[in-house]
Length: 299
Image (tube, rainbow, N blue to C red; front, side, top):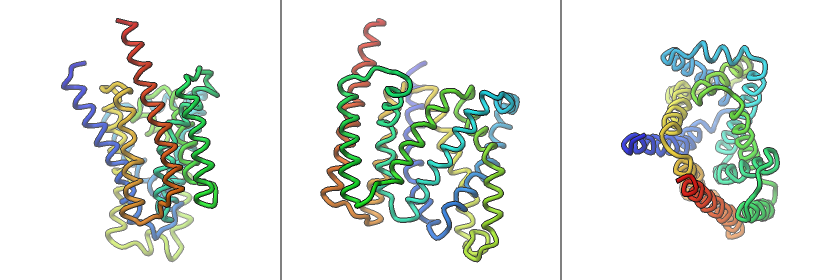
């Protein structure tokens, strides 16, 4: 792979993460509606977009084959449920003025992935990884005290995203085709949900303005575009480079929640975030060190 191709991949990855981060503004504009209805419409519109995408990619046979295989289907269903939980916690937090919690959740997600590697997959932790897990646990305690409650939305976002990644390891499809299969699994329950909620006076079809209806209609595109950009980047950029770029999402959410939406960031809460950031720095530096050593050994 040449340097130009990698640079294109990096640009695509940065753009994907920027869009994912800025989607908080998108969902904030729809904060007057029921989060369950918002997720339902997001799934329905995303399914339509993904049907068009895989038709263009001519990958229907591959997707149908994965859905027909009982073993693959179990992992696809599991990934679909976890993705719904992740989206649900994220949208719920955004529309209820808890954008900072979404930032915390996505900061913690890489630490959760590391924990699953150690506790579930039997990977041996380095000293830096052990220290980061202790710091993450301390951060949860500190933030629980600061909020006066457990930061449930952040934990659901982190845990669901972590296990979603674990499920994806067992799905024999690329990123775009895998998401298409997941959306097909979810679309019938989503249609039932939006149909059941459509009769309410405050539902999206009954009370949404022209602008809000337009945003809702394009939520599938807003979901599919960054995913496609990320899939493009993942094929061209080493994960040692792509991994740290993912922190753009929680950084954007932190700035939005704190400075744009005026959510409270007292010193005690800042300490909790600081502990998570230190843990992430330790893990990132350790990962770069290990990968560099492996490349040198190979050379």
